[in-house]
Length: 225
Image (cartoon, rainbow, N blue to C red; front, side):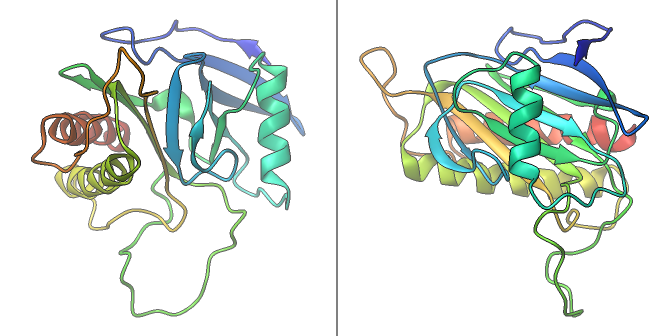
């Protein structure tokens, strides 16, 4: 993997991402890598590093539209190692070109979103059927907060980010709630003597409102690209 231009963008410095380029099966693909290091706890629905735990990096990797690998967690782990990421992290996939990401910040909360909307619809669909669990997510959202959150507040932040995503899609002119394989990652500081854990992250709480606004702006920007 090689770094590519333009350089990282970040309004407050909390969520700077590196843009990386690689060639797989003759196709030029791109990734975004955030490496905040130690001191972070993340909650994610990602195929690699999902759940709640201490994580030190997040990789959002573009894959081909015909992606058929049945071991995406191993694939993402290898890509992260090749990019220089060490320790535990979160790996996201998308068929979208991640260079067209949206970025926003609100009151110290930052969000980065990538949006591929070729296959979209409503979550509560009358149609039955399942999407393959290994399919790459097409709307990926990464949120970083400069404060600590309790476990319950982390879950609340995921719900808030998801609500803001749907609102953003409607505001961007898309009649849908998302795609079948969207993923989200929320990162907050580890509670300690310097960071007292906040118990709420709903859309009307202080930090939840900031999450909602940052995600909304980032998803609108990504969707319109």
